[in-house]
Image 1 (cartoon, rainbow, N blue to C red):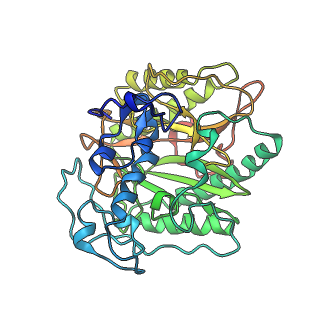
Image 2: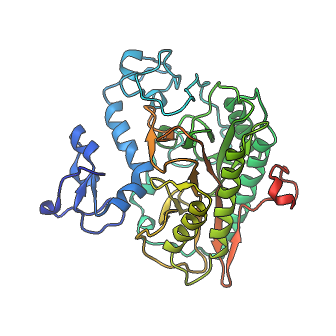
Length: 402
């Protein structure tokens, strides 16, 4: 949020944590949006809120796009900002916008919106793309201690999420499109009686995220075919019995180079080492120290713009879990808390850049990025990995055989 102005004279409160705000989002200022929704106390709070806060900018621009007619495509306007994902047609414009692409990956067309049967319970953004409960919940500031009933629901939900991700993992091979992976994730989620949480979340147009090569996170499944030598992260979240379960893994496509193999294994190890310290009394900030140490020793860098998060009845809530070292996040772990750890590790620089679609985050230098994620429960004696691999999970990681 560099370049933000001082807003202390208005006595605003931080959108993320509720503390007195000293900074304001420069993009909100440019769009002349209300100051109350653009104030933050620190850079850390702004970074932790970015993945959700950016939808405010999209919604502001939405009011100037089209007439709301189903499948309408006003390409001249949509190309300015490339806001295809917030139109009901959800198709990428045929001509790419001018953009300084950092790597070789390019966007491909996306398929029509996938249908959810009427018997599936829906989160509150499913129909109009706008979360209602999540942004204003007290759980954005207070880390919830789950009841035994909530924990049992989380176990059921996370087991479904794991099985759905395993379906996707079994499809990874050259010539398969990420859209085909999304279709399989969508169908498997629905078959289990759950809802694919990303679908229409802040207008995201697909049921999972597929992040290939230089894409750090939030890649949108499309018509591009996977190629030999790619790496791909598939991020799955499902909504079941009123709670969410979230996990992701990075996979090899055919024969990958040694750097990519080392990167993916290092990222897997970063998550494992972070999980190993989780128990009551540990400070949340220590997770970043553990991850940063291992990544740095391996010659890689840690993404700072995206973090792990609390999860349960809300998709994203407190606590924020930065993955980089020397972060300033406050709080200690307590039994009954559930949250994700999801380190994003880059082969080159840690800085990221956003594609014009407002979702696809890529490495600043175009080099590859990898990520792994689990949903965790803090227990009285340590940690339970709610999204743990199963005996039936595809055997795709050589280092697990050693």
